[in-house]
Image 1 (cartoon, rainbow, N blue to C red):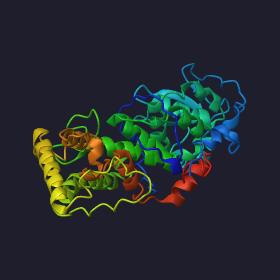
Image 2: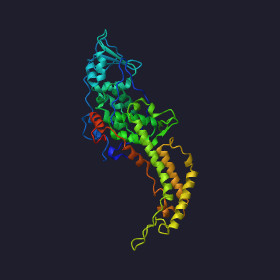
Image 3: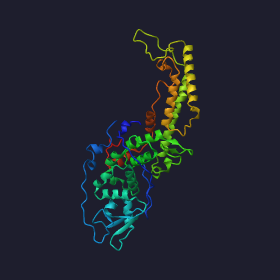
Image 4: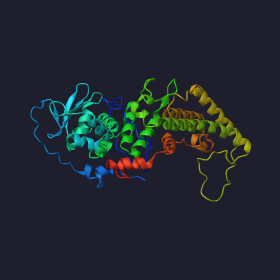
Length: 414
């Protein structure tokens, strides 16, 4: 994979993931998504001194005894709480402080205004479609107990689900005490499989980390292909596992840009083969410079390069014939460019190049100047990195989001 030096490096780590739809809340409609759009160590907020939230464990919130008469099944987030949240299909209950919740989330502020106290003196809100563990993580953080989340920070899928909840309730900024630490522990620099890419793309975007986002897009472009309906799918995906089917990715307004980037990369790779044929048929090479009394002639220059044009044409004809035979033997005419990933297509072109030069005697080094691919095939990572850099992002929006979550501008690649 390409090394985005200007957007920071990330140590590799493994991760597993799966999809989950955006939660809905009883009596509350989903809020619209806000989209945004020099080598330095990644995640300065963890290793440096730029964020107090991630340098040392934060003190836990003071503990108060549970109110009398409260069921033992209710998890106490605040002993002085006045609101009970019933979460998930099993309706797991949490006693929380409504004022703390409303300060963290405008969406919860509206919900609290719609509910009156029940007979036991507590207001109750039911969140049926919200995951229990992700909501528990959010409640622990906003009630001053982020250290209790640390043991769970190896789970990338959990971070994804937590960000689905915080995005839905407009409270992602509340994750500032744990965001940088969690991202550093789970980010995979060399992510390959489609489900992992989808999860990581959402996480990077929600946390406003442009460097991580661009590196993930790089992996997505290099490994993606089109299915029978023309939709983009990734490595290991079945024909129906389209990226556009992920609810979280649908909201990012990025898939069209990424697909256009993939198309540009494919066209560049196809152009390498077309240019190789063109170089041998339409662009006769110029004679090599005359010998001087200086150093000996470079032995890698073609022997016939300084000979009359007829000899140069003869060498070009031999190379052209070898190239056409390689294209035919390796079934280039049967390649489906739409269903091939840039990485696979690059490997095929490299195989064609090696097959073409294999026919030549003396050794291929003596025909470097005759190589129709110019001596070396461009690396797919370099091509993808150049095209990903052309995608327009709202850098100011990403900078505001990442800084609110405890990243420095340099550490987030913004």
